[in-house]
Length: 415
Image (cartoon, rainbow, N blue to C red; front, side, top):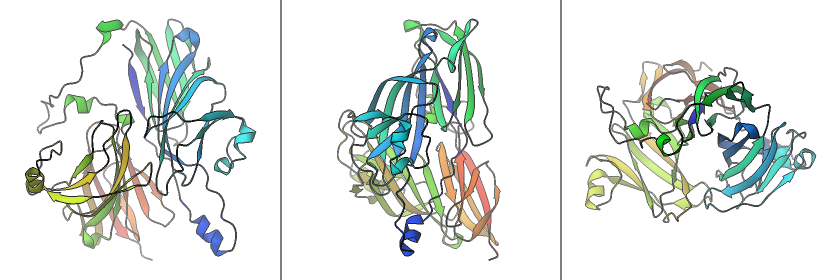
């Protein structure tokens, strides 16, 4: 049985969206073509036999440049690539691609200013990226790189810098972990060293017992199930972003993404947390831009309709129903849901201070302060950036399986 090591780099790339196009138009200058952008990058490295010096790569990435019909994936220097294939994640269908040289690739406006000394996989997208939408891709390839993967005595070594936030490494069958090194405080490329040697079980004896549904017995409260606690945290992609309104309103807008891959599934229930009241829900399919209907229901209405939300829902609770076309086998759907919550206990004014006090359960969470406010305190370490419009954004990347209790305070700017 192969063993997977999860690596979750706690840095966020600073992405600032400047209104260059609008400025250029106002000055009578043609707007520059947008550069390639992406999100949700995740890589799984599956180490093959050490004699091969090769590893299979499963790279998941989401192209986000509105209107783009291509996506370029660089082939790292020093690596010899083979067995490439690309899939459209929404449909599961293969996509056409070709290998192009760096000088040829950088002629495309998408890659303006990028490295011309490496080759690229040029992917033909299944459809143009819709406005505020995405094109989700799965790129499979095998690299041979003797400087990254080699023997050292009786051990194998995987020594490779990682340039994206979320990664996992799968050891060859029969190898057990003996050392791992991962440190990054720069926000740039992170060095990773993994060492392993033979000694682990193989075959049927190596198969682990599937995680159960039992819950933690040590915690003083009802904890998560074993299955939830042992899920690969780095691969989870349910990001949520809170946009705080002026604190006197107790309101914050938010959006979060949800992926459904269960064949036949045709609806999603978003259960509103106790103490919060929802309004103005909307939803659309990120891959196509298709708008979806939404409906606010109570738990009592849910029970009367004999619908199952997948969890126990109190009769007085609120939830948002989002129906969609049934998911076909081998396909999936990714939805972006936007809502406004009013939660006086979580978001309020305390004298002249803004207070946002909320438990955040996802691996990736972000909080954007309202216009005119600056950060004074945060109970949880965060990456703090200033957006193009001057608002302050805090990104909380939580690699642990439990939620983080975020307490944020801010004050109004003096000018």
